[in-house]
Image (cartoon, rainbow, N blue to C red; front, top):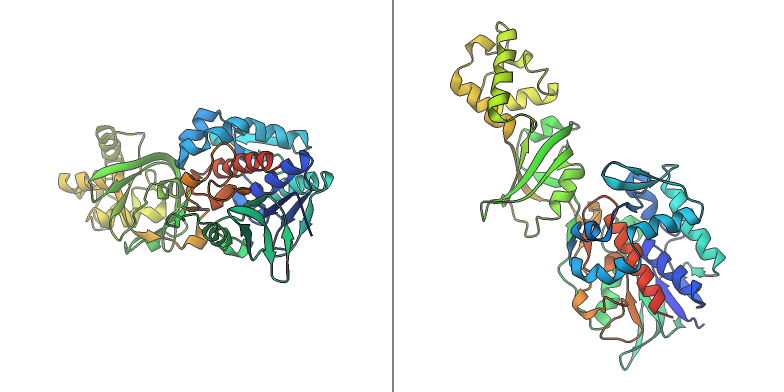
Length: 409
């Protein structure tokens, strides 16, 4: 069997690459080892699919945390706005939510997958549900793809089979093996956009508590410098912390080791220390004869109160009128700097994306073609590219897939 272009992996990058090449007149074979295309795409955004981010190219690049300069050509060729237009033109109505996140109007990720699959069908892309076992390479030229019981020949192969996150969807690292066989280096593979583990004994008591409108700061204890800060939402879990801000923060915590990083949460960022102290004094006066454990309900979620008091070394049944100045100061400090010591990332399989991958120094950013093997292209998460949450990682997939598909035929 022979094709003009073979694409390995029917995720967002692979489907975009396959459709683009087919639109240029190529006979395209799309290899997907799952029985359905877009399996990981179908579960993104809690099943809603944050398609992209409605922002300009400069803002997009600013949200890329690994090798942003490599993406200039790709995003100039196919921007976030182009992505929205692409889906709208194919009948998928979209909407823009907080943080410029773009979702399907239906709130169904399956509609995004269906739009891409229908587009491929219209263009005549042949989807074969088989697993690629290796690349066929001769004298630094691609010749096709090896299957378990045969081969498909082609002068162009696009590797777009994802990273290591969400292995159940088929992201098992095959692309890294293919790249290595072609002589490409793989940078260290780490989880990114991933929840964080802690050994702090009181955090499991807060399991299920979601905080909104708080400030989160990450301090690197090796350098005693703050490396990331954000305002928004987070979640306490049985193992540590999660939620949008935590996932984004994890992208900055590259050299993880136990106790290297401390997350500092300002529970009342709208109030400076002096203003918060005045607020606290008012509450203490209003509840003068009540226990502290029963007096902070207007300031904190109920589940958080005993933990905050314990950290401030205030016995829960201390009367409000008996609170000392030293205790009040300790309480203020805890409210403005609630600390979580980070032990480790959660497993890479729980990460939204993989940090690391095919080293981009050996990939042409203008075409996505390998500099080592002619006719070999890479797109999507298999490359050492990742970004914050908010649709930016899917945009990397579309933009690199588009560029690879345009140049493969």
